[in-house]
Image 1 (cartoon, rainbow over the protein chains, first blue to last red):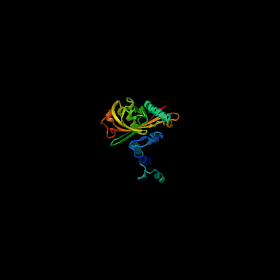
Image 2: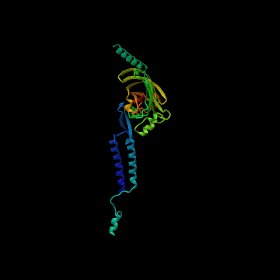
Image 3: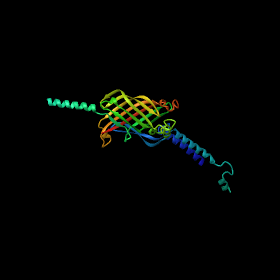
Image 4: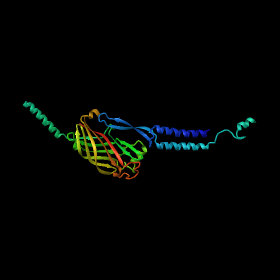
Length: 98
Length: 205
């Protein structure tokens, strides 16, 4: 159960990160600030003020894929879950018989 | 009639002498409003880099009666150059590229103007001067547009009186001309750098 959950979590992280990256403009580099134009009325000069805003880039995607890989690898530490296949493997049923 | 003529002559002479004696104005480009800015753009085959700075200072001498005599120096603080990606910014200012700690200033000193064309308050010209970057200087000619805004300082800075001078310039430099990793990484960091300057200086009275 935990094994599956971790793998789903890893997949969801990668899919979510890709959707966010594309939605934010599919930038090559991660940005931690974005320009906001401001114009001086007297001189007509426009300047880009930068406000703090996280925009994911490819290195962010790579980091998420790496973390997801670790989570997926971690899932192998947990035993497989599933229906019992042989006699004696399902203790509940064994105890029910006695 | 004679009296009127004398008055007109006196006024005309006064105006002529005032114009002749009018001293050039010194405009200070340290902008407390943080509007003055320069943009830089590098368009390499694999990567485009766009950044800007508002760390601009300098003084320009401008004579409204004779814009061709304009001269001055504009300075950009190397450490004020900004990129949206913090790692790129750190690399740009590091010793491999601009070495902002060792070379804190980028400047252009205009020594003379040529091809001067004035129409109303707007003057276009080619400024001959020296561009300095990372400790190396190169003589360059930069096309400039000067807009003289008489008595407009008060509209921008309340409780102050004076004039404004707006300077706009767009030109290209090559990083290889200034010893910045010449011939290296040009697929990602182009050799040509487009610089675009929009600044306003104040001459208070």
